[in-house]
Length: 163
Figure 1 (cartoon, rainbow, N blue to C red):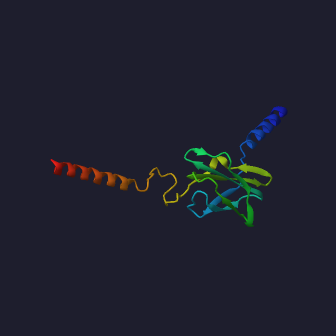
Figure 2 (figure 1 turned 90 degrees about the vertical axis):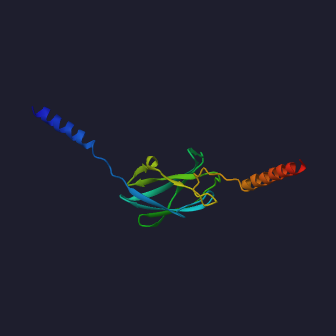
Figure 3 (figure 1 turned 90 degrees about the horizontal axis):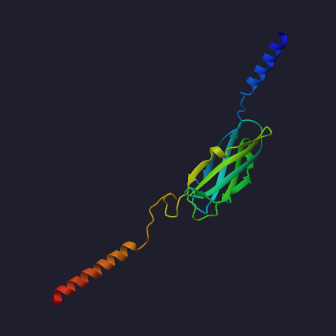
């Protein structure tokens, strides 16, 4: 009976210990400028809390719609204060209209990869619109239509005068 009781206690202890979840670090990332453009330089600042942080890596992917370029950034962030890390990144793709970014953190000897919780930021196009804007305007297109309309009107009025 004692053996069954001890075995049950050991089994329940192992079962209960499997439900203990390590909380891990939490973070908040800010960008400067807050509305970056393609091929711009962005300063990433991460505020991290929870545990003893030994390494912080920033992963940034430049994307165009649903396609992300294979080469991205995976860089070590610099510690500037307690719990605060910074890194400056120069974007390289002029066609990119958004970025995805997340952190990989070593806290208390355990690596935490937050790729599943990545953040996405739309890039501001050169004309000030969001990079996801589908309105592509050709400069001067309206002028061509206007000139053709005037030419047709002149042709019609000339034909009426000849008759």
